Image 1 (cartoon, rainbow, N blue to C red):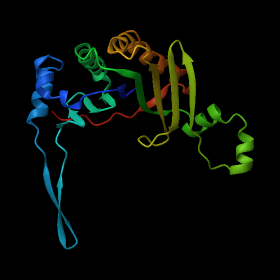
Image 2 (image 1 turned 180 degrees about the horizontal axis):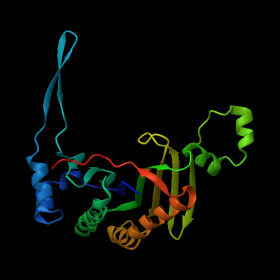
Image 3 (image 1 turned 120 degrees about the vertical axis):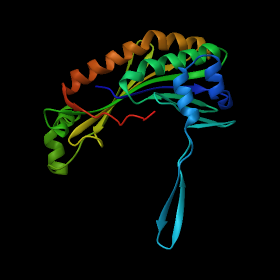
Image 4 (image 1 turned 180 degrees about the vertical axis):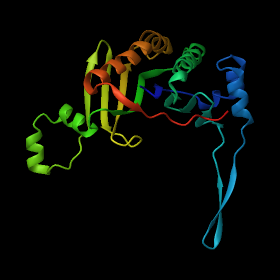
Length: 238
């Protein structure tokens, strides 16, 4: 049901640390992932635009600079700037690797100051019932008032925010731009890091990631019903 997940940290980071050699030295990623990324070269292409040629250079999969690190591996993508870390997986089968890589990184960088943590899940689903009617029933209980004011041709999207334990949970629903007559669903599980230390981040991820994943699936099933179809992004070719 879910086809994308990310872990986002807000704190103070040194992007230049996140070099492929560092990942290899501490066995943070399987060697095949690193070798693939290091072996990829920027792709240059020319496009004729009226009276001149336009040169397009695709961004290489590995960029490591003092103010930014972008690392595209076959299974996950890591982006780091001085105040933000993100590890992203766009295939369900790689969610565990994404989580484990983040845990390994911040076990090594245990003194990194971190202020907040977000565990995120996203999906695009098509349902048996009309998706717009599902969203209307969820967010527009007084549908007649909407019809009287807006007519019959309107769409609904919305956000629900609540707390569960020490996590603030934000749920977002809107018409999908990937599946015709589908619904996009996003969930953010936010935690403030009171100690400002990576050890607390590791504990929260370890204790909550799978629980948050299961809660997301239960929530979408309870609120929207069983999906008829899911959108699956194209795989990265290693």
